[in-house]
Length: 366
Ligand code: BGC
Image 1 (cartoon, protein in one colour):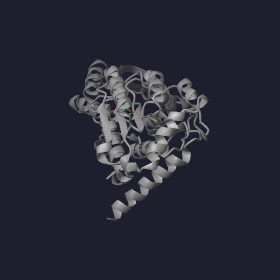
Image 2 (cartoon, helix red, strand yellow; image 1 turned 120 degrees about the vertical axis):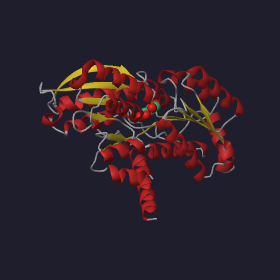
Image 3 (cartoon, protein in one colour; image 1 turned 45 degrees about the vertical axis):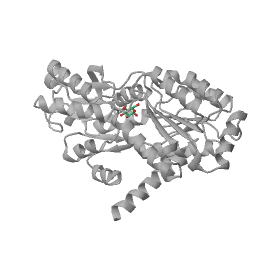
Image 4 (cartoon, protein in one colour; image 1 turned 180 degrees about the vertical axis):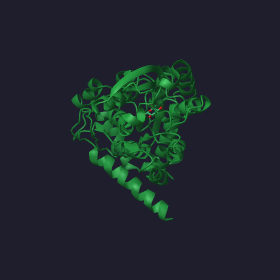
C-alpha cells in the first residue's frame, strides 16, 4: 500500500518534472532547440478539429497511435502506459487505436493514411524512420490533424518547420546524449584500476548499437565513450556492431566479439537493455563474470535488467522514463484535442541506475 502511494507520488513527480522542463533546454549535456510555446495556430482545419472534439468530451475523441514495432521491449512498456493513461484521462478504450509498423516505413505510412481517412482527432507517432518525419508531418498537417511525435526525434530542421509554420506538431522524448553520458559515467566511476584487467592503461570496450538511423543510437554510442575520455581515460574500441535494439542480435554480436577478443574486452556498452540482456547471455556462456572480469551497461531500466543490477550481473543501466514520456505525449495530445497548443519540444531526464539506487528504482516501477 505504502509502496503504491510512493510510486504514484514518484510518477506524479516525474510527470511534473517532464512538464517542468517542457520548452526549456533539455538537461546536460546539451539540448535540442528549445521551442517557445506556440500561442496560436494558423491551421484553421486543426482548430476546427480540436474545437469539435473539445465541444464533446475526451470520451468521444479518437486517437491514432503508430508504434514503429510492437516487438520492442521498451516501446511495449511505453505503449501500454500510454494507453492506460489515456483511458485514465477520459478516452474510451475503443477510440484508441494502436498500430504496429512492423519496422517498415511503408506499412506505417499506410497506417497513418488510414487514420487520416478515418478522421482521428489526434495522432501520436513513433516513426519507423526519423528521416520520414517531413513526409509524415506534411500528410498529417494537410489533413488538419494535430501530431505528437514520440521516442524517435525528427531532426532540428524538421522541428524548426513546425515552429515557423505554427503547426500543431510537437515532439516528446528525452535527450539521448544524457543517457550516453550516464552510461560512460557509470563505468568511469569505477576507476581505471578496477576496469583495466589487462593492464594496458586503457579502457578496452565493445559497442553494441541500436538502429544507426536513430538519433538515440548515434548519441549513446558517441557520448558513452566521450564520458570516459572526459574523465581523462584512454579508450580502445575493439568492436562496434549494429544490434538493432534486439536481444538476439546483441547476444550474437557479443558472443562473436568475445570469441575474437577474449579477455581483452573489459567493457560492453549496449545502446539499450534488450541488447544488454543478450550480451549477458553471451558473457555467461563464455564463462566471464560481470563485476569480476568484465563490465556491462545498458539503457532503459527494464525490470529484468534492474534485477540484474541488484544481483550484480549487470553493472548499471539508465532509466529511460517511459512513464513521464507516455504521460507527456498523452497530455500534449489532450491539449491539442482541447484546442490548445504545446511547446514544440517536450523533454525529460534520464536517471542513472547502479547498485546504489537499483532497489528503489525497481520499487518505483512496480
Ligand atoms: C530505447 C530502445 C528502443 C528504441 C526504439 C530507445 O529510446 O532505449 O530500447 O528500442 O528507443 O526507438
